[in-house]
Amino acid sequence: MRDFELVWMLAGSARWRRLDMADELTLRPGTLLLLRPGMRDEFRWDPDRPSSHGYAHFGLPAGRFDGWPLHRPITGPLDAWLSYLVWLGASGATDDWIEQMLTTVVRTFVSGPLPPVRDPAEPPPLAAALDHVRRQWATRVRAVPVGELATAARVSRAHLSRLFRQAYGHGPVAALELVRLARAEALLVRSNLSVTEVGRSVGFADPLHFSRRFRAAYGLSPRALRAAAGTTPALPPAVAALARRLRPG
Image (cartoon, rainbow, N blue to C red):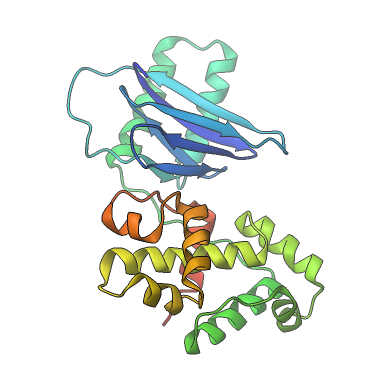
């Protein structure tokens, strides 16, 4: 890439991967990604659902951009500004207007204060299921079957699975496993627990099964990730929201 590019999803999803580093991100509506010159990367668009995205290329004088964020949630005025940018591009507006709007977006993205992300209100069955998980995990983190969650939520398995996918992009089993693996990732980086102990602490009794599931999520074995501390990909925003919802305390 020879210039900067802002990318954001309007509908659907895509998997972005940086080829020269271990950065990955699932892009969905609500996240703004900033690519910069020299990056080698690729996008993999969702093959099962239609998707569309907005983008804007721009150049800047030479300088240091190492401290700039890679992605930020689209909160506060950013959503309206990005929609306005799309409209300006389609309306044939003058370059001056587009440049002024783009400058505002980039300055706010890089250093401007933005309101915090507010998690949307949960449907009551989803809230009941997640409250059940928190109670169970307060004693022991484990895999919670869909049937048990559906019973706690007093809805069918199919309905609960739809609610999870709408909120977090995954069914109940996959979404909760990603949260458990995220906790494992933090322990691998920040604690002296053995890999086996880390796996057990997040509900994986079998070390081999833990290693397989961890590799499937992070692209590295637990031992390899521990050796490469600090280079792990960020959680997708929806999964990060679920992890916050289930945080102890």
